[in-house]
Image (cartoon, rainbow, N blue to C red; front, side, top):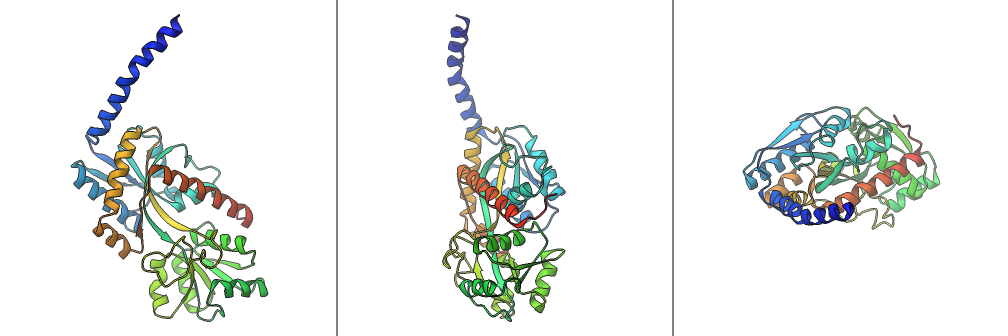
Length: 325
């Protein structure tokens, strides 16, 4: 009898609960929003975060305060957001490196990239492009793979170090094509690019913005871009998918999350405003000037992207044997 009575009361309260939740979303935001960045000021992540925070402020009239909490490959900021109140007033900008690669390389990560967050929206992508020194006797994916298979271990690639996106993408290439290309690690992608230009190393995966000027100048040559379609500004560069290797897809994506358990109506309102912002021509142009393509998604699409990338990079780690730390 008591169970029936409690159940009945619960059913009576449900409409009030949903009315309250929707009313909260309708009025959101009623105070300042914290926007956590896991890097020091400056750089691409900072530019994207500040652009989005300014546009959200203009739309809603509430401050969106960018807070830099560098450390632990973004872990310091990530933990703060994971432990915040699930009310949609604490946001986090993440990248594929911090939210899809770091989790498969670190067993002691102090946050769960899936369970601790509510995905809000994808905001930008920068696909990896494979470039080669002009001395490499291959000008296409087909020619490069043929060369690598004819002379196992003769080709090498540079990266900013094991675990970086460039390294992971090269190891993905090796796994998919079953080739042996030697890894030459550097302490940072800048040093790797310098030696690539000098001919000390032969290949490298990099963000387009870092190498496209050298490609246009003939100092490097592009082999293919690791994206599903040719991105803006790289319309003349073939994709790995076009070359017959659709599994070789890798981008440094930027996305906005909030704390797990945030009300869905608030997450949806955030998503709608972020998507509207991403479609603004001035935002697209600002991102493009820095080598990023303004990209949007639904919360569900972002959740699937994170899960897919976690699975992809986990397999790469297992296949390549890169040690975890």
